[in-house]
Image (tube, rainbow, N blue to C red; front, side, top):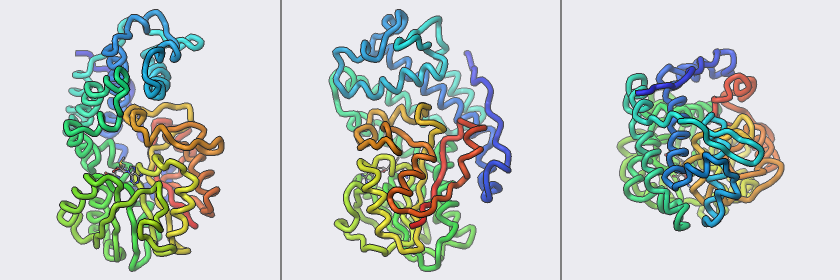
Amino acid sequence: MSVRLGLIEAPPSLDLLGPLGPEIAPLFTRPFLTLHRASGLYTARICLLLLFDLGWETRLRSGVTLDGLCEGLPDQARKPLAWMLPFLTAEGMLTQQGDSYLLTGQPDLDLAGLREAVEIEAPGHAANFDLLDGVRSHILPFFTEGKDGDALLFDLALFPLWLAYFRNGNLGYFPNNLLTLLALREGLPTGARVLELGGGAGSFAQLVAELGAEQGWLGRIAEYRFTDVAPTFLRRAQRNLGTTAPGLPLAFQSLDLNRPLAAQGIAPASLDAIVGINVLHVAQDLEATLRDLHGYLKPEGRLVIGECLKPSLDTPLYLEFFFNFIKAFTSVKLDPRWRPRHGFLTPEAWDQALLHAGFTQILHVPPPHPLMNRHPNFTVGAMVAIP
Ligand SMILES: C[S@@+](CC[C@H](N)C(=O)[O-])C[C@H]1O[C@@H](n2cnc3c(N)ncnc32)[C@H](O)[C@@H]1O
């Protein structure tokens, strides 16, 4: 067994985490840092194995360009491959020479060893790796037959693994929810009307119920409107959240953030907070969506966004592996000012987009700089945008 996780990054010091640092610092446990590192390595190995599954090892060993690899493939193959080749290079599994990518030697492709290392340090996360294995085994027809990525990724076999991923017990996902919760909690008035966009598996609503009760602020919420565009998620939330998010005054509705909310029954200037965790990056036209959302907030309301964040637009994040097969992630309207290409954005790009959409002030939890300069692997954050 070869277990080489390499150096596990030291946690950031408290002074880098801003005013809510004492509540953020406990995220950076050794199990979390190990899982984070192992997930990046596992994703890189899965990517290379996927290229081998496609029969391209020999081509990679003689050096191949992105154009060369895409020849004869459905057009949709280009975006994931345009991400995978630089990602594999950044992870040291390929080398780049001009436009060519080259595989040399015998890269470490041991998956079982990584799983074992994580099971020791951060037990209970096998589903994260099962999901990556599942994507590898399901996605081949995306490249070979031009099949739809969404249908392949969210089929019945993989759906339970997504549910296992989007839960607060997953140390790899929990920071998204905790940082967004801290951002929401600050400034939540009594009698607050809150709307969650893309609530999905419901893990954020559960955390609001749990920590809101524990910390004594749950009673400030008068209505928590859980929404999602996907009927499967919405139905599941309607069935379960009453029990799994006790005390949260829930309302449910189907809502598509790509359509004006007014056309979906939301009244202008009626909300104290709109929250979206890992969903706003799929807005087809980010500017239009942010402008629209602005209109449903009361003057003192807040848009609270939890997102994966990039230190620079050129840095591939391992989580983008999944998303590059999803049309809503890749087929978005680009804008040179904040979205020059699809994918996760930098904190600066979010600031630009939010200010341009009419918000006057943006607060970050935690402040992204100098944190991300010193810890480029810190790739999640929450933002509060004030009208
Ligand atoms: C990455 S998941 C977010 C996970 C969720 N916060 C949780 O903890 O389970 C993205 C969610 O956004 C939803 N979504 C995707 N496109 C959407 C759209 N156009 N409008 C609203 N929700 C959307 C998906 O159905 C999914 O539930």
